[in-house]
Length: 328
Image 1: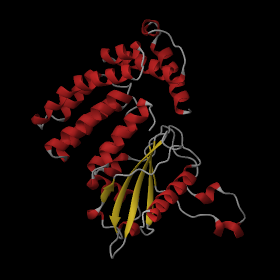
Image 2 (image 1 turned 60 degrees about the horizontal axis):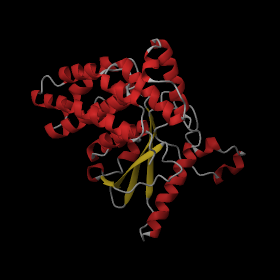
Image 3 (image 1 turned 45 degrees about the vertical axis):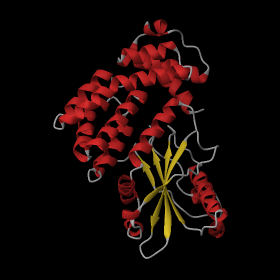
Image 4 (image 1 turned 90 degrees about the horizontal axis):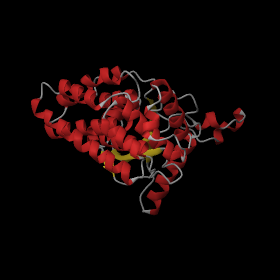
């Protein structure tokens, strides 16, 4: 598994949101053609604990695998692959083909029959997907040879271009899309009230609390566009009609302390810890700069030295470091 804390935060959040069978079933209904969905008994969909992402892909990919019976007999595997790259990878169709072969090979070794594997790719990079989605796009060949090229096209959920309002019928998918899409954008604070309100009104108490905690934990890990005070205020407004859920606020100091402890145990700089502890947008940004710099083996100065720079210089430095981390 990739040790990059940003990658791990993305992975934990997406996994939490999509691992519930009813949410995964909604994802399949949204992303697959109707003629495919009508063959799937989504009411009986169940998760498979095994991951099939190999070591060469774990830096940027994670997966959730579900068994789903077919209407009329048989079964298929539905796979949700998360792409944690900020830029689309043109070799993704080949990587997915290799992934499918690995699953089928494993089934044969275990004495199982071959079955249909349905891959769905969730991509939440800041740059829209503009590269190949099929093997035919990857392999240049005369028309007479095209029958020898493996044929499948990736069902792709590109959050940078997907209007989240189309997900209103699948409330938790809408929450997932909104949080991932806006976590690094300036519009995040103004959208969070509704995110928290939807979670509070859509899920039972315990599940709602777990999901609200997952959102808080994720945003406190990856977002530099919102402060802890803004998070607290949005949370309070969002769950105001569900007073029992205000207990979720008590977890925020615990999350912050866990993040600080995690940062120290992973060798993060004191500056990052101070930045998170301050709970301010500027402090969090400085902390993030120092964490990224350490990942890259670069020196950017102490917390005090960075604090003397103006906001535009800090943002430019953060963008440069983040781009370098994403390209590793």
